[in-house]
Amino acid sequence: MHTIHLANNKKSLLQSTAAPLKKVRGAGRAGISKPPAPALPLGGVPSSVEVLEEAARAALRVSEMRCRRLFESARDGVLLLDPGTRKITDANPFMIELLGSTLEEFVGKELWEIGLLKDQHAGEEMFRVLRKKNFICYKELPLQSSTGRTREVEVEANLYQEGTHLVIQCNVRDITARKQVEQELFAAKDEISRQAAELRQKVAEHTAQLRQTIAEMESFSFSVSHDMSSPLSAMRGFAEILLQDHSTQLDADGIKYLEKIDVAANRLDTLIQEVLAYTMVLGGEVKIEAVDLDSLVRQVIETYPQLQTGQVEIQIEGALPKVMGTEVGLVQCLSNLLTNAVKFIVPGAKPRVKIRAQAMGADVRLWVEDNGIGIAPKDQVRIFQMFARIDHPTAYEGTGLGLTIVRKAVERMGGRMGVESEVGQGSKFWIQLKGVNL
Image (cartoon, rainbow, N blue to C red; front, top):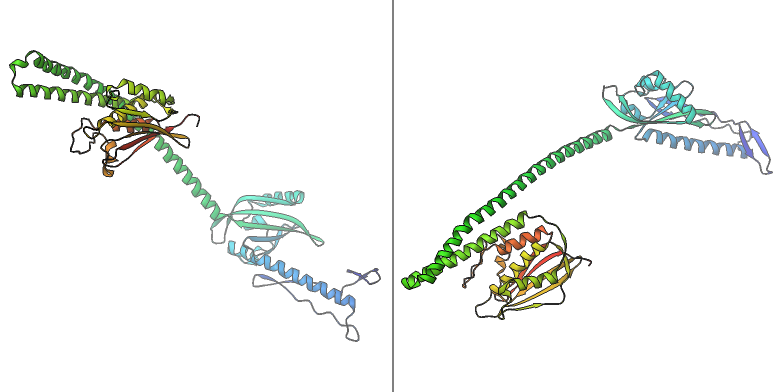
């Protein structure tokens, strides 16, 4: 029965002469049969009502064809069920392919009979929920195909009105690949967690071993220092006695040899002290705090006699800022850099040293610039290594540990250091640390 709006705005109920639509099946696929053409009235010219009815039927056929195409091309399984009987009335090709069955093997069965639900009771419970909420979802269900292969599926079922009757549509999504990926990710996560725990354990063990090694090295260094200092002091003392009290009994060669002994003893004493200083830098406690560079630089200059002679010119450019570091570590850095600056100069030249600070974002870079002999590019990395010395025609005293101590002290304070230099043009050493209130 159709309602037609006539030109005079009156409604008329007409009995449709169109044949009813009918679903047909063949080879496991559903199709739409074409209804017979309406009979023409006497005279061969259709009435306006018949034209409207034919247009409505054509629109309905197009709509059904679109729905059928969507149904058949969907990449999820789709099942249609009769709410009254709970039995399957249709299945799309993807669902048929998923289970490896034919359409006939689906139609007339309940969901539990094709393995989608556990049993008949589960099916009844599903329909009770659907009647109450019109929707139900199962996130993970095992589904076994006709070949015995089990797949993980996700099922969403909807109860909706279609014309004058109710229909249940079940969308079945194959999530086997997704679940496999999830399992692999969980396994990878567990493996990473296991390896991380092993790594933490190894790091803890190695850290403990390293601390023990450092403690042993400190103990050894202090022991060696004490054991070597005593005979070294005795050697120097006897050499001085010979020079002062018995020089008249020695010839020129004897006096020269005693002087060489004294020089060698002094050098060995310096080496022992620097090895001890390096050991303290390695193992000493690092407590980072604000340090006043301006005050500390002036204290270091006043402490070392070789920095106070009238033959040395030291210029401090402006007021130096505060930095985050340790006072002990910075004293080690400044004393080594400043004494090197006045030591490694061309013979006869007056040492000139300039100290300045440069803001580098949140950091402060402290420069110690000299007019010394300079450093070739090939040596500018090597000089920071332990016992490294530069070959030069002029012999300069030193142990090769000073810049190593500076590098290690700066690293322990969380900073960096470097040098800019050319042979014969002096050197510009810098250390960079976190600034305070910049």
